[in-house]
Each structure stands twice: as structure tokens, then as C-alpha cells.
Length: 112
Image 1: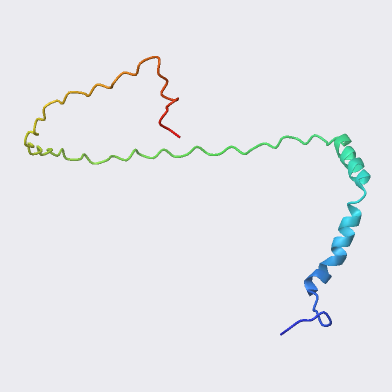
Image 2: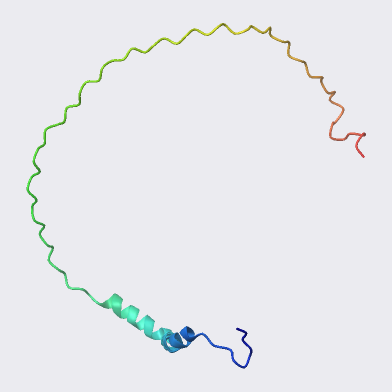
């Protein structure tokens, strides 16, 4: 179904809520009323109500403590012995060359 400018159907749900939108937006335009009502709410003193007495609850019955059955002690089996690992000789640590103090490596002449 194609719609053209001549027979475009406007969504009906917008038309239903449009009067409510207009009324609510007009009522919110006067902010002075809101400030006065807020001030009146702050100035109102509420009567003190008596504190209600809570009924006393009956004591809870004491239940016997449940006894857990004793668990049997299990013997932990010994792990099989692993064969000894191969012993590798310690290799000497390579020494780093020292850079003379007069040369700054950040000013290299080999970079373009």
C-alpha cells in the first residue's frame, strides 16, 4: 500500500494524547504556582502521632542441636615417587658490553 501526500494517514494514538499533552504543558508553564505550593508544604506542621506499641512476640522454642555422624578417617595413599629430573649444568650469564659515557645512543648517525 503506497501513501502519498494526499492520503497520508496520521497515527491515531498521537491524536488521542494530544489534548492531554497540551493541557499538561500549559499547566506547567506557570512555575510560580509550583514554588508557592512547595513553600506551603515546608511551612505545614504535621501533628505528632503517638508511637505505636509493638506486640511482644512469644519466645521461640528451643530445638535440639542436630548431631552430625562421625566421618570415617581415610588413609591418604602415598603418591608414587617420580624419577629424578635431569640435571642441567648452569650456563654462564652473558656480559653486556658497556657504552662509553661520551656517546649518547639516542643520537645515532646510522638512522636517516
